[in-house]
Image (cartoon, rainbow over all chains, first blue to last red; front, top):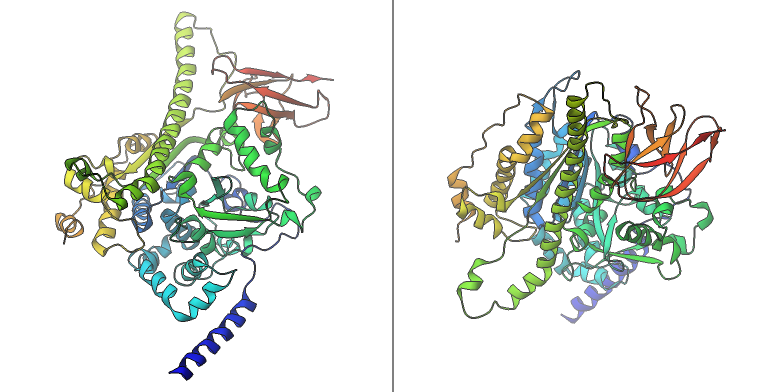
Length: 497
Length: 76
């Protein structure tokens, strides 16, 4: 027995030595600043928008969120239309940007890498797989104990390695860029622990770290995006600006310099201050620690909001409107939020420790997500009202004075549409709604629950008044298909057994 | 958010923080109101270097669509 133990320890030490030698930085240094890398302009190219600009936002929520956002992709893939003068295509093919958080990042990254052709594989490799069980099994494997003792290997690395192997097939951001033709630009969002702010895996963001994103595995970004606190450790990146890069060679985008001026609106100034902290606080920030993107924004809409409300983005929607590249903006959010347990208030005794912890960890995220969805809806409401005001003013003035013409023109008639899909919109079946809102947040859901969530997403899409309104403008005459959910599936997925 | 008109005697490409925004004038010859996020921006025009001033850093306030903020350049 003693011999076996000694042999085991010797083997473990050998493994530790070997794997220790193999370890390298998560994110390599950038040799030269330039326009290359995973950036919007490189992914979508000139004129990719074709008048309609579609943004999808995928929330966090483990496999539940991944299945919900996947159901949205399936729904969009089933919609075909013929925008003149082009050939018939699917609405999914028109998606320009996907911004995702946590569980939603699995769907976003997989679709961006493998496209529609990879749908079936995503179901097998992730949605219907017990990823959580495999993670636990790997954590409990003795050879991983040794690795986990190393200072440069932790639970997040274990998770990233698993995702890299079984879901993303060793793809890096260079692969993502190579595969990007006809695919959307993906913002995989994590949270910078020091700033408590959104951190996106794009070369624009990595420029600030003087780091080359192209060699980073996509799985690392997804792992950071879904690194739920305590369960998974933070993902650590090197900020090479501190010791390797010549800061003078880096020229921040002009908007970032403008946004750094103290007279800016507070939100804009805070964005600039956070981003510039990677360059200005170099001695204090040689490392950047990332956690679940849901801590900063569990709906994935904050990045798109910046692009939708100004010029402070590499893919500013205002700039595209001003350039007459787009005439319709459609934002669809797949929000897989759950509900509060209604049984709490039926009893005098207060909720237990798990209930309190659950509320503390997810309650503020849910409230912030609600505010973010409202922010987009109100922003679009104001833009549509402004354009309507312009038109109404012209009509009224012309009615009084036919020779009147407005002293200035708008770039183009633009319409803005915001659609949110969430379980609380399942209003015709209270039991189903409660069932969906009570689904667990984990990386292993029963098969029936995954299938149910996918179908619910498609049904919510096809019955959303806001989406139908958008489709009337995008494809007049289009009729939504009926999406029927099998009662037997609901019964199986929602069974308490 | 805000709306901005860039005045110049002839059509020129407008750059806001070095991002192209299309022409300052519509095909009709009227100014175009551009969608701009409120805050500090650097404006310049493309084409020949006959514009005064060459660039303008301005704090664009929130403005309603019927009363856009005006940025004026002159030909020199």
